[in-house]
Length: 99
Image (cartoon, rainbow, N blue to C red):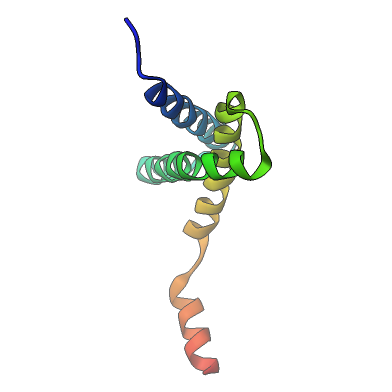
């Protein structure tokens, strides 16, 4: 059975991003299952969509796609977790109050 190389490359990136996110979730678990699923979805999408531009920008070989996907997934999950902790109502009221 032969697979399309583009599908295999995309699957490698998505699996790497998911692995990076799972490591982050195990190191610092979320409060609820819904937050865990939201964080994992954000890390997979962050890793999937940012890996190709980073590989092109750093002139890396495509063999590093899984590792770059894992790193960007790990970092994307950290950013998403920080966004979950923000109190947007307070930030908006401060912004409107200063204007």
